[in-house]
Image (cartoon, rainbow over all chains, first blue to last red; front, side, top):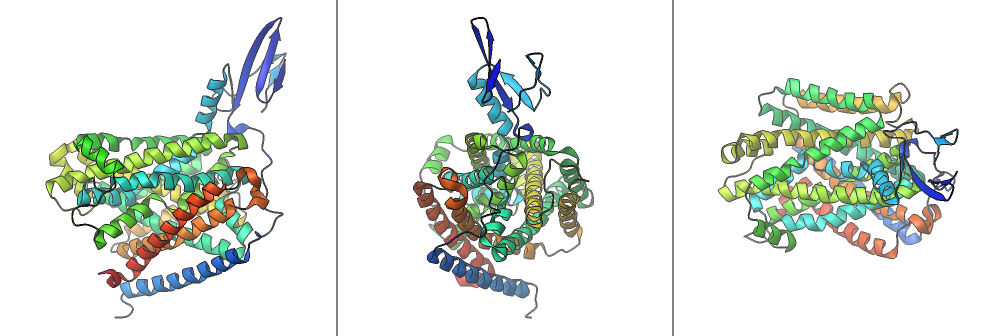
Amino acid sequence: MKMMNGTMHAGIGDDYKKEFYVVHPLFDKPEKKLNPDDLGKMKMTRSVKFSLVTLRFYLIGMIILAFYRVLEMSGAFH
Amino acid sequence: MEAEMKNGIHVNEDKLTKTRVVKSPVLRRILTFLMVFGPGLIVMEADNDAGAVSTYTQAGAQYGTKLLWILLILLPVTYFCQEMVVRLGIATGEGHAAMIYKRFGKWWGRFSLFDLELVNFLTLITEFAAISLALSKMGISPYLSVPVSAIGLIFLVVSGGYLRWERVTVVLCLLDAVWLVLAFMSHAGIVQVAHDTVIPGMPRGGLTTNLFFMIIAIVGTTVAPWQLFFQQSCIADKKLRFKDLPFERFDTLIGAVFTVIVAGSMMLVGNVLFQKGISYEDPAQMAGILGPILGSFAKNAVLLLMCNAAVLGTMAISLSSSWAYGEVMGWEHTLRKKFKEAPQFYCFFVGAILFAAAIVLIPNAPLQLIIVGVQVLAGLMLPSAIVFLQLLLNDKELLGEKFSNKPWNNAINWVIITILFILSAILAVQVMLPGLFS
């Protein structure tokens, strides 16, 4: 008998029997995944960097607006 | 794969979950799919939470079947967003929060985490408020319903391990199929429903401000930031393998289709009020009205389904928070471990649930303020979360050609991002400065 890629072939004389193994992911051997740890921060083009800086200012501005609204709703300005 | 052999005979150690032997390749594919199935359905259906029940039934009650077409458009949008997460999760085996932290640095990592945790916590409060409201209509005191729900959720997550949690949650998701029964009972004209689903149209009165914000609310309800974090962490926790990618995509597609069908059914149930000319307040009030029209089954079913939606939402949202925080903090963060093996992860989960439940029980808690906070933060977070997702999926240095986006992926995604960005910015500004659009 030999097993390759989850398929087991059992030779009994000339008869040929094929079996397939199905293993639940939780109980399978761990795989080597793509690891970001050694790569550090992502390399970005200047336009992507600019877009992210813009996004950062947009988000900071919106959060300030949100806090203003929350304070207004709670009656802080009355 | 590991085969255990004793004297030349295969020994199947665990017949339920670990290893099975089948005779045909078709059976192998079906069984593999069943083993992989779960995260896609859960992340999609949990998005039909208490807020979604409110939004979809309100859309049906105010505009009849006229907005069904939006759900059909949102089906590919939600699928494409989650499919990217599936690829990223399977390729790296890491959660979304960890990926942002590692690839974009501390500022973005902390910002994304803080925003996620805050909006998730506020959403948890609204979910418990919904449980309280629904069960109050059935005569159960909030002081009983809210603590019992919280303890039940904690027990399910803390005591069972990944597999039991997933199986119970899948059953809870499938319970939402009762919405289809209710939609059938609502006797909406099938031709009208088919027409309004396939052919985009506007309700009578055209595009008013209220309608515009209802459309934004439907979009915001169907595509939520926590979903990105949840599914990637769930895939990592389930240890899905490279070869599971097509099966998990199919799981996600099934989840998206099921969720959109359930959402459409909610609109059809709300449509009963539209047809009778009755004004809508909230799902609990709608349930009370449906009693005399469709029978007590419909009334009780809507209340219990609202409760189920809130429970599902609470579980998924609090888990996405706990997974994300655990990833960034470097804690053990898996449902595969027992409480004593991952104490910080489980304590974070338990703390979030108990704190949110306790706030709902405070008399005169500022729920309106919390709902505004949820809308604003979700609106702010969604486009930026999807921008990061898009950048991560174009990270060829990490993902290579196999898992990174193809040009057609990018074209579709940038259209989605642009639309979501505009809609969420308008929603956030409208909530913060309501006078601007009146």
